[in-house]
Image (cartoon, rainbow, N blue to C red):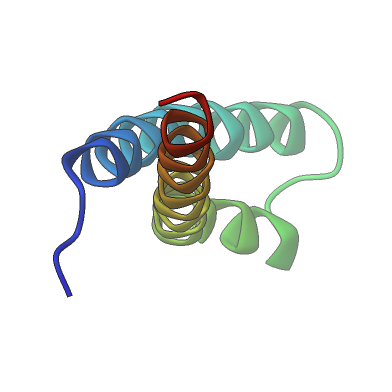
Length: 80
């Protein structure tokens, strides 16, 4: 099966967004935990966002890219 370039491009962009937001979430959670209750299991789980968020965002980006490609292809066929 040939994967379209729009789905791959959107998946890469969303994965980079996931890395950025994962960093923001994990270090923001670290600072909040240090200033309030101290380090705990929740802090460790927040750093798990560095792994999970890029994977989740990339997957959603790939699926949205495929769906948008299907919609655009359908519209082109109908209007042509």
